[in-house]
Amino acid sequence: MHYQQIVTNFKPIVRNDKMQGKEWIVAPMVMMVEGVLNGNHGPIFYPFDEMSEIPAIWNHKPVVVYHPEQNGKALSACTPDELTVRSIGVIMNTEAKDGKLVAEAWLDPDRIEVVDNRISEAIENETTLELSTGLFMDVEEAEGDFNGVEYKGIARNFRPDHLAVLPDLEGACSVEDGAGFIRLNMRFVTNKKVFVENELSFEAIRSQLMKLVDDQINHQEYEWAYISDVFSDTFVYEHGNKLYEQGYKVEEEIVSLVGLPTEVIRVISYELVKNDTKGRNMEKEKIVDALIENEKTQWTEDDRESLMALNDEALAKMPPVESEETEEPDPVQNAAKKGAEDIEPGKPVEKKIKVQTVNEYIKTLDAPKEIVEVLEHGVATYNENRKALVEKIVANEKNTFSKEYLESKDIKELEALAKLCEPVVNEDADDRFDFSGQGPVSNVSSDEEPLTLPTTVSS
Image 1: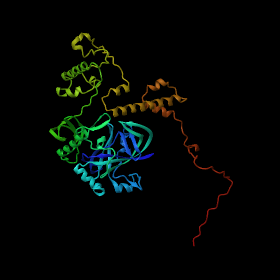
Image 2: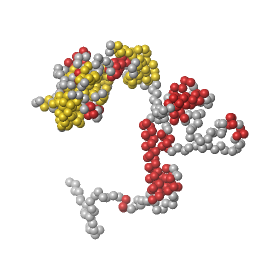
Image 3: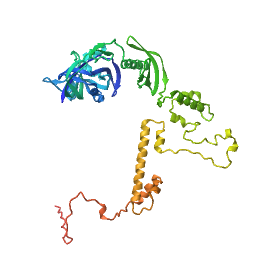
Image 4: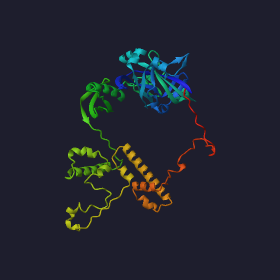
């Protein structure tokens, strides 16, 4: 196992946020980029598949100033002494995407001032800082090249320890390599990396929008806003258990709000992929039209959008749409069209309805995945209990019921019958006690005389 330090650049796009009841300075960063990096083990290839294996293991690892060392040997930063001397925050929200390992540095303002106030000055002035990841890893012996850069080993099985901020040192993985300031966008030409004109990523836009929304609502009472989605010219945020949509624009990398927020609702719909999408939508519109026009329902034109958002199975169960499983039309509903003479007075009306199993019914529910899983698990447990009760009763030598008869009974009857099958325990018998944990009892002759009780003498 090897310990490795990878140095990258960091230029913050900061925001303020809350965690554990206190204020933090939050800065996005790129900690590592797929490629060949020169660390203390020479040129090693760091593949993206290793970065993306479990990115969350980086979360809550300490952010420190400089790597801890002793006599030139690297040390872990996760010790009480090193955390007391060097720690200024933690790593959070780590992700692996686009060939990079990105995260946020949640920095404690009080710790920054105690450990090294150059960090706060650099953040305030948006001065580029260098970062260096400290991690344990395995090095696979292999030679090759990546984008024309040769390497002598491949980094495997990352075990992160900390992230070091280097106020006055230069990193091996530079901004030009794709690390560091998150607004920098990269492209590759003939295996050489070149800069593309700076542009704001959605991550950077989200950060600026978060600050603008905070300023706009002015932290009303104790409620905080959270941005749910960012689109090309609008975004949605949550505040006070409600969702709001608002426009925004970007000019010279400065984000500003457009218009006023509008309350919205979240509508999630999953449609089956079919070739005849147009025809299926037309059929759905006909069903919705029938629901709105029917006098027996309470649906109005204002409900059209909500009805169209429902899936086909849920919509088909709503009156007055007839189920596709009904083999014949209901004679009672069609009496007005056919004439009263089509129905013989006093004769019961027969309807053929397909009976669903419990699991089939659950699958048709328009419910969250977790609710469906709970229902399915409950049904499975219920069936297992019924099966065990039936087997217990059938196995009893005094049982006279058939298995088919027992399977038709409800579970309360089965539980009552199963209790009758339990053996009767003689409470007066000595074998109801378990003395297996104590030693053997010695044979004492009944002829032996009991010991004389001691006599106390008072003075």
